[in-house]
Image (cartoon, rainbow, N blue to C red):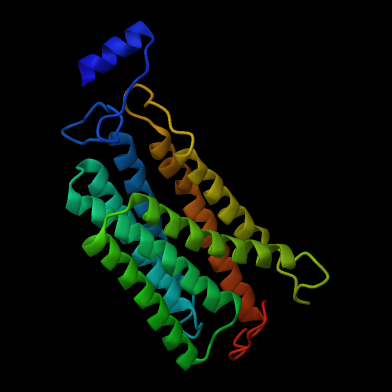
Length: 257
């Protein structure tokens, strides 16, 4: 494979993929070294902010447990991304895809709870059941019916787009006459974060043969999300601090903040 690729580059011919993957140079048996490194750094960012969330957000804040869960889910997602890029087997592929899908679904789950001030325990339990069934149905279809890459991508894009639009709408709303009377000067961080993450994901569309046999569009996508993890956690911390100063426990009001 590497010899064919070397000759193709020398002759100015097209570099081909093999079984859907570019011909990467391996490092100690690692199939995609750059993606492994960037996946590990993403996971480390979530790990870094876990104690920050635990320490800086008081236990009285209703969403603290949700944010801690997000840290743990983020760590789990990037662990399996790392494992999959080290060695591509059917099991590691499923664990990577399922973990990523779970993370995207959970992002929408806690976005709904935060943005609509859902505090009623019964409603939260209902949401939890609905989202758990959605994830179970998704995994069951991919595991027992057909491992459909197109369907999996479409499902992730739809859920991710809903979450992105919710945060973007909320962010813009803070700077309009129709927003909350209590202006949130940090609100732009939410819109900036979801938009830049969406732009980073677009790298998947503009795929290209790996530079130096190591760095491809997929690995650059993982690299781009590393600093954005910090941006998002800083937004959550600022939002929590601001909400606490306002005495934010507003019951189960369904209006947008």
